[in-house]
Length: 99
Image (tube, rainbow, N blue to C red; front, side, top):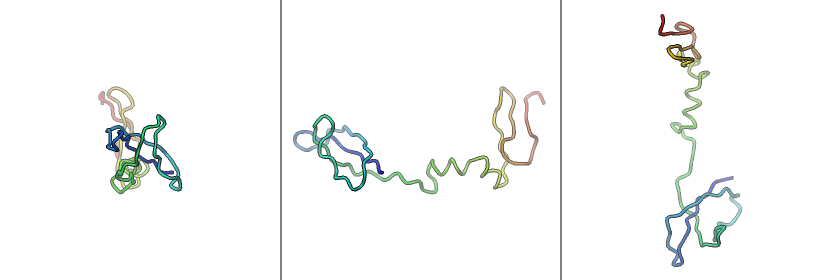
């Protein structure tokens, strides 16, 4: 179900600047009043689509599995001055400041 953004209107039908989001089926009619009985209208906003460069796609692109598949090596900090390899096959298994 999509999330819709609604604008709260004043008595003259002008937006007050207050908005809220609500998840509702597409088949439902748009709301005309909020929970407090104030008039509202659906706001026109850009849709949230997971495109090629969206944060949603970025997380999967930077996953350990994907980095390893592409030939990268990734290290994560496991303690102060100590890192372990979590993706890839090249390089040492761990790096420490004491080495």
